Length: 342
Image (cartoon, rainbow, N blue to C red; front, side, top):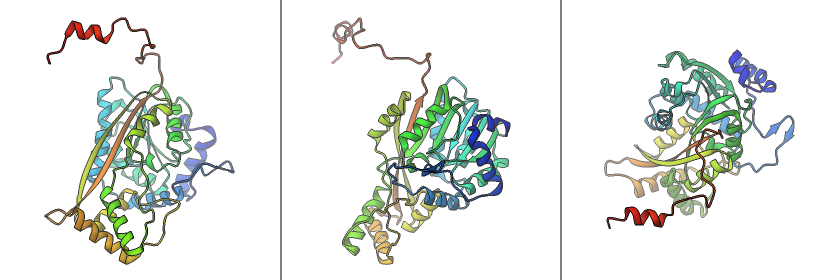
């Protein structure tokens, strides 16, 4: 607890820890900070997303192959780093999978796990005794990625696995993560990209047009790959890196897909959502999905596009690009010297 208090902001730590011990249902959102309303555009209902994550805390499975693959792929980037990261913060998303697969990677000695959902934090805390790596000092608290209650320059590593795409201010959340890092600290994040659930989006659109004569937003907007690099640069990270993986998960039917999305806490949380889904529209969506994308064995595929982002906080030891015009050899000279086999 002493180590956790040294990292949390002085005006936040006591409130957040009290929230866990009392199991309070209050949220720590940027919608209302210190009594001041935020005029920022709100795309997602953060309170609804917290409730969805409360539900996901009890529905999620540790053997979810998709979640485990994404977390393992994200943490694998630590193996490419020669330095160690003694103090790390894990933000929302797939907390359990990230903790389970950490396995001493990155030289993490102190791990702080944060989520907006009290039930999710409690579930992770209860599962800590079953984790394979018991040498990591782990702390838990409730907090919001949109208002990161962490002192500046107090962390060596920030990890977010499938959580940041639900923030209303993604650049702001990434800027706060950079500020929380020590110089030469590492930011690792995985978010769902715009091609995610493209089959379900098409099926929903066709079914709604057929049954209701129009469409309403049923799936959340997600970042495009071309935006990821700009986000890292805008947040002030050095040496930004972005790569993309697409995962295709097979389900027996559309209902099983929806159940999986609920277990991951990835269901619709748009502010301007339609709260009513007609039965005939739901059945039509499942039928369209099966007819358009169904495989020969009767299963249906669902695409999950995952964008992996890597960024470093500025440090003098990091390589820097030379100033424009400082080159002493031209590409034409190199071509003449080495030539081309073709």
